[in-house]
Length: 80
Length: 80
Image (cartoon, rainbow over all chains, first blue to last red; front, side, top):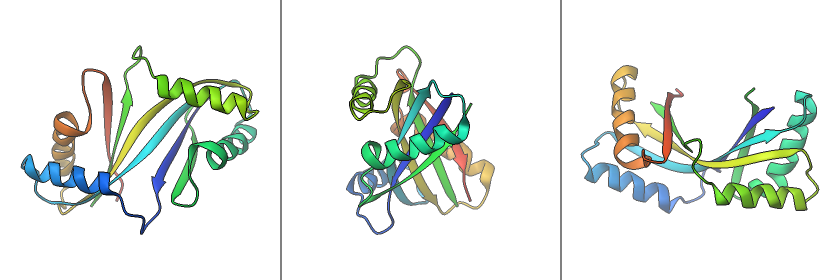
């Protein structure tokens, strides 16, 4: 089973990397960009076959290792 | 308009960071993880209102700045 965990910064948390990308896009001539926030994505291959159990396990992985829940949100999806 | 660009490593490209995460998950007691690949996600806020034009612009941003197309794939979505 394949799953994807997406980790993004919470609202209000400063994202200097995103700001730098926004500036770089402007320098490259891409106008009309109002904001960029960078996050992470983890594509995880699991042996589990039960989607609900897998989702619970993935939530635990995200909370314990993949995301810093003080400043980041995470979202778990089963993709196939 | 909000858009998301997801950048992932192409198949066959080594991902030592993903391997490290896979090992760490194992150490934390999460068995049944067969593989982890890490990618990046960019949440971009645009002033454009035409979804097709925005998508074309985002593809150009991804190809020129956000992704290294030698080793990475990218996917563009309009999210709202």
